Length: 241
Image (cartoon, rainbow, N blue to C red; front, side, top):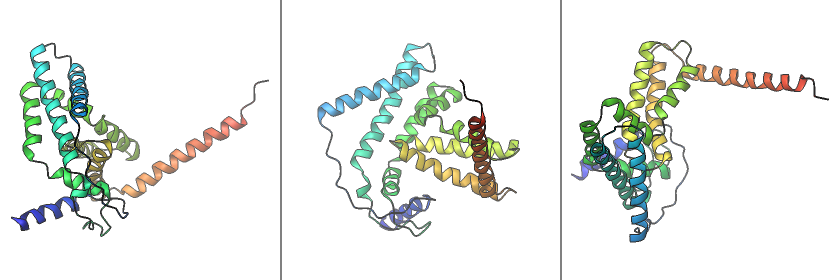
């Protein structure tokens, strides 16, 4: 069993591609929430869940209550797991993907990734029993603040003549990131999950006739040139008397 757990930990670490490297000092676990703090947190969580569901305009009070309850339960489970499993519960070490010391964010992601799968499965099963797939995606977008479409818009700007096949593959990877990311608590953690799949997208482009580094450089250079031209035009414009 120990050997199996160690193997799973190594796999989890290896997924953390492109992590920034710096040494970490272990921090003590956060103190347990007081009853008052938990009650306030529960209230805020339930309010957020209700707002997300309201945005779907289901026009079905019973269904709205059920879905809001499913979402709130998940958010509370994520909160509690984060609080009970801080980065300090993962031993300091190196990232096998690059040989650099694990960052605190790396260790947080590893700790959270050990959460029982049933927590995620309960959320997704509950949503899909009550909502259409587009509505499920809308809820996942709420959790991840629309990172799928935001990132796809970036690809559309960076990759010249993005093909239908490329768009499909890139989008599917980002949707996988989105569903995995709903098990994480804050935007730093969510962004770390998206970085895994963004790296996969860049690798896909590189192995299918594209050069991500060159495309990104061309995009940045063009943006800088456009900004410089706009500034020059502004400077040369006649000033109002």
